[in-house]
Image (tube, rainbow, N blue to C red; front, top):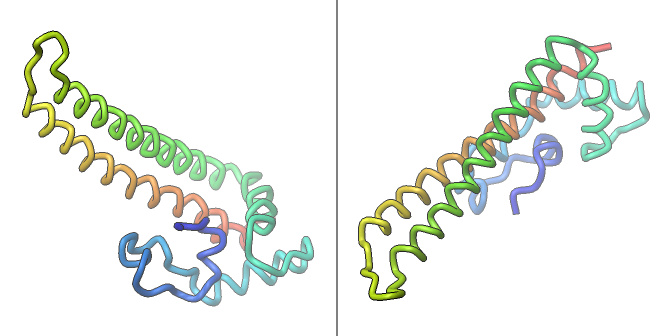
Length: 150
């Protein structure tokens, strides 16, 4: 459904559908940047098409540069954190919904738990968007840095 940024960076810009739900995620690389990446990868490794193999090649080259490696590490930590928090909030919402609606042993329904569950779902959606942003930025950093690295 979302596809990986290493593919969407080199495709024509999408309109409507998922691109309207996830704005910015389907933006493509500037044409000149994409051409520079593909030109260098064709010369250095014989990779002339976008995809996972291009990303792996570019990643192995750019991570040798200390400044780029630190920046990639930051994006990796940020997108991992956002992904994990998003999933934890979904699980917390499920626990709150189940716990708020159970009447075992004479318990009562707790409407406040449903409000907290809704807040957890809303926060989870926000963190999922942040995850997508940092995931995309990680891949963008690889491709933008690649033409400048050894």
